Length: 582
Image (cartoon, rainbow, N blue to C red; front, side, top):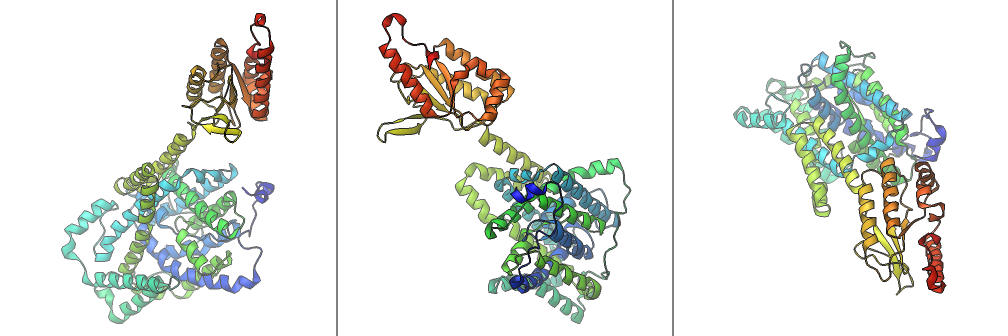
């Protein structure tokens, strides 16, 4: 979190993505807004096919939600709108709860947007923006790849002009193969033409709005050749602004309980994907960015979506990249897009009636294919083989079981991966380096003493119940190791120990007692003030002795060498100095 956001506390800062206005770049931002509109208008209409709502609701996801994020968000770059990942989560979660495409279905979609907004606001109050860091890039790559495969398989029927019969991609693709003889040649030709236009435009230049060109051309050809007589078209599309109000649904606590897991899954996707995108562009341009403030913006955007009769919105990496490629450097670009969509809603919805649905199927199919990150999966396979199988399992879960289960598995696997990496530290020994007349770290299997009779053990994690056993096992093994001199003192280099829990404290008391029985003194170096307070509270300071804490390894070595020198000069009748005299 930035210092600015800490000073602001719980206040709701506004216009962070707009101010200060760069007057020299104002024209560039407006032009980028035109570029975004050219991409987003056909794209959002395509997402309505994924989620199963009227095509006009796709335009609604731009009008109010994008404007609200521009006002309340912190990112100057993030473009908020409809997204295929959250659309797929909602479509899979609502299956069986209402008739797809019905008014009740749309009301449930809007209610989910409101619930996601509530979760965003709650997360902001609790300052949970850091949760985005716990969805690893590995499982996120696998999740988005799985969503891409699922959505692409579901759109094959639209490309072929067949009726979709299931939201299960494997069931649907089997059905398509069985009905391949009923393929509509007009739909196939339209689909191929759209794919050629979009892909061909991208080969020429990334800035060519291939999707918009394909939509406009398809509308013109459909009107001129009366394609509606041969294949399915959108039909009449209502014009005008959305009606504001709560979703028309029978509110009840059982319904909220059914929708809560879906809303939470969407919340995780929105938080992780939006934060990752905002963080990447903030780093690229050295801009301010606060994920907690962005949660307010995303919450307001979804609140606007729910109240304007449309579905969930998310931070879109694709749209954000398009704005950046068009030269946009602030939310002025997104506000420009909102104005253009307003004009379309007021004056240009009539021609949409002639648009073949195969056009939207082709657009969504391409979006889905781009989500299949083959290059990313290949890189994970080459660089981190174990993590590749985690990503592949996540992707397979999305395709075979469902998107909602896939995101939950992604969360669990990310947390397990974090625990696996964090709880068992890669500990080592700090030993003398005679060649360089200094110190070096060596493996625990090579317990070289830093000074005769003194061994330094570097524990590289906080001490808690999960790794307390590892600490005790390694320390007691080192106590029995043979060195160039009998071990008289074992020092714990504790600079990495940020916390000690109750279980670890009990282990330390037992370990100290066992070492004392062997005549070995246990001391600590670089203990932080917070950990020292925990030692006092647990009674560990009394157990090890108040003189067992040193500010540096140099102090430990000097004290031990002083004891060793005293042992040499002490008469044999005293049997040498006591280890406790360090």
